[in-house]
Image 1: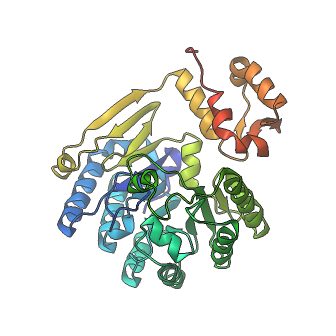
Image 2: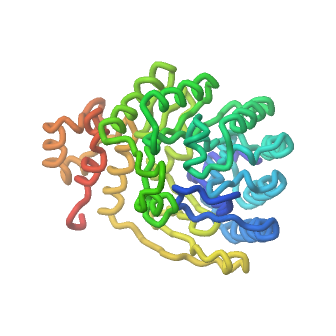
Length: 382
């Protein structure tokens, strides 16, 4: 993959949406569903064509990060993943140290597939474990056991992957603090470079929501608010003790292994999304691709929405995306002029702090981050 001239171009993140999975998880509200091998092959061909049609971006941008998300991107064959990356390299220059991530589900990785990833330049895997407790995995509708996760994790290490993320989920039905700590212990014993730890959110329209509303066995036993809060605190304390730095509200990494692709979202670096429903931010305009899979397979590429950002939109985004990072955002004169009273009030409330020319959430502010971030929405244009 080329470098050199890329250094003179603007940074770009690339997101590739793979909307397929083996089986829909009970809690999932993402744009994904099972599909035949033939449909997946058609989709890959359409994805490559969409990339080719975006070739003009290569005149202005260099690719800093690539992220295969979904769905379950590891459901694709290794050959297909390699073909997508090769097509990208034909129309745009890659930076010399491009971070290339593939989201994976345990049970979908093979030695051959991992070898194909390595040969194609993939250098980071994000593995969706969620829990080390098989009962909890079954309740979530996951297709794997913890033992299958271990097999895939060890296989990835064997094939030379040295940048692995593990996704975890707390506040599950029937989960205790002790059970959550056991999951954290089992995962950190493996020493992944990165851990994403989220609390379960029951989304309307999912099977999980329906079962919870109907009071199905096992689905009403959610941890109470106090236990959920303690799990959250346990996560920060335990991972900190094991050498993981919290760099964003729900993300922890060993030094030097923060996810560059996710950081680019929070720092509002331009990115281009390919695939059904994929979002983009290019030169102050937000785009969202159509979610119509049938049209996409016919290589009919249309936007569901196109939204030029005003100065107000951009400032709001800078605040409520940037403040998700533990280091916060650089405090500018514009921010002082627009948000002066808000900054003073939130600082007095102890949810915001200033230092080193930056503003950032305090521990208390992180606890009530939805409230704090909403305070930066403006009533009028600027």
